[in-house]
Image (cartoon, helix red, strand yellow):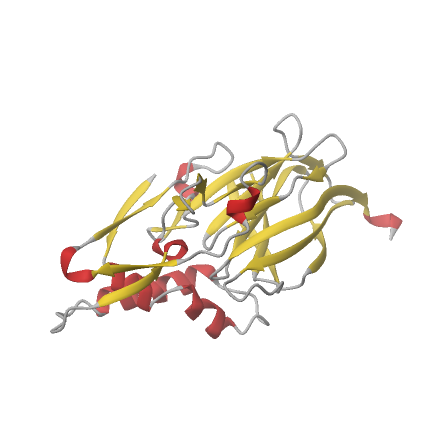
Amino acid sequence: MGLMKIKISDMFDNAAEIVEAESNYNNVIDSRKIKEIVFLRIHRSRRKRVKRQCIAVLIAVLGLSVISAGAKTLLQSAGVIGINKEDVLQSQVGINIDEDKISDYTAEFDLHTDLILSENLYENGIPIAKYIVEVSVDEENKIPECYVDNGAMLIFVGVDNGGWYVDTDTSLQLNFQQKRVDMKGMETAGVLEVGYVYNGRVKWCQVTDNINSNIQLLFEEEGNYYICLRNASSDRIIITNGSINIKKTQEE
């Protein structure tokens, strides 16, 4: 877990909307570069403000690994949807904060996972995600309905908490539907980075902003792989009707 002090208004000014606006959804997102830009902007904008400001801050943008939704349940930044469904489906509401009363904000990143080596949880000192959770598929390799907030990451594991063993003649087929939970109440797609974890390292392969995604992952080396998703949108994303299956490439 890493702790980083960030001024609330700085984080707001460099929120995830910048990522969406500058990526245009069409190109593969260089997450490391985007993070560097955001944090550089934060450091460059350390200047005194003359007037007292009350700013609306989306809790998801603040880097919190735990948030309260409607004061009913305590939500992590990603996880399986169950009895918390009503809260998960609520849009993330902004809060008013008197900036003069809070000089610094400590963003807490929960990066606990045994699947990624500790030295690979950061890129140039920047966390690869604000929160990481492992989600188990069932015996039919179906992914449970789950959610992921801005900057958070899902790693899918098998029923025995293992990955999927593949060789160079084998691919992994990832299918799922997604929608973002925004304040407009519209079912639109968000932006998700798709990749895999292998030998304790994460590799991002592509970006999808489709409601229905059918993604084939090919591998150059035989081994045990875990598929992962990271939310590059400003809003929470719901994952439904998902599955992961091994497929021989010669079957195509």
